[in-house]
Length: 434
Image (cartoon, rainbow, N blue to C red; front, side):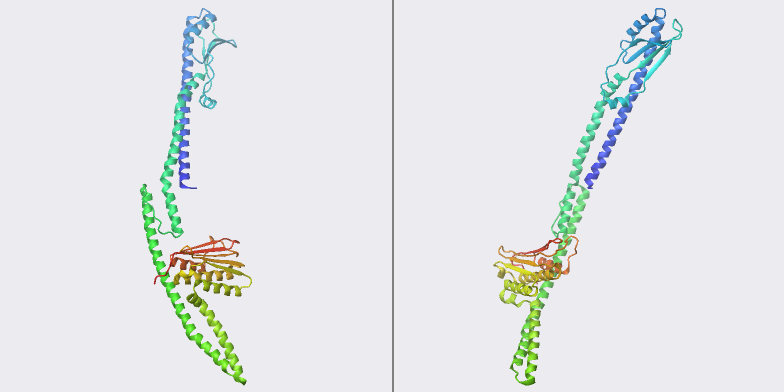
């Protein structure tokens, strides 16, 4: 649940509470006004009845009715009756029109039935009494007419206020989206992401802290990249020197042993010579394997494409249950020495991972150098892995380190049962600084 949603829910609850309190207040005032008005009118009617009865005491009921109709002509929602001996005679009455207010309002505002009784004092009707009943219909209508604008105002203010605050809060929190986007960029390795100054002081402080953090991370990454470049350069330099030394010294010695063994003839010497030759051939194979792992000589002599062909052919020979296809476009010879050896190592690591972990039967290796950049893609149909839940191993980290040390990018697309796709892109003439 977002902060904006929570704030809007809180404000909506506040506005609804204000609206309800306003309705309760208006209804309470209207109910009290209706009750007071009806009771006041009823009491006034009793006073008029007393006066009318005193003046018509000897004239009979007909005269009393006429007098009351004259005096109560303008009295609304009143019914006046004379009760005598269980009989009720209506003396005057005004039937109010239907209430022009919603039923819910009428039910909430309408007071209890108002009925006042006044016994007659002496005269010709000693056991009789006046009964005055008040109908609050007109008062309810007037109260609704008075309350309607206020209720409408409270409702409109609540709706407009809530909508305005929703918009304002959204605008205030808009920078948070930029902050989150910048943090996502940092998470993806884009340490150049920066935040602008914000209007809100609190968010502006956050932006300043974020920018300083990004600067520190960017400097740290550049330092780590420089150290990684030096580490790779030193490691590859040592491998090259060792490979040349093995080739020039140990390789020639083994070749000499094999040649001498081949020149020996006769008896036991012949058997010893055969043994020497076999040992020499075995040592020569081991040395060639070590040379291939330390530094592919074909890379220095014939270029990256030929070295990759030899690597893939050797891998296919050792893994008859799988097949690796290689596609190298023209232009790979124009790559620098650092780019060539690192792309070779990445392909080598991909093939090693495919044979050890993925159980892939098909692997496609493609190197495109036509657009100036070197773009390497390695795809297998193995069992894959969950990239989000699996911590990358040293092989993937090493490939990423090699790519970023040359100023390039490294991407892994993997999912369970869907194989693995690795993409490496290097800028033109990518070189490792010494």
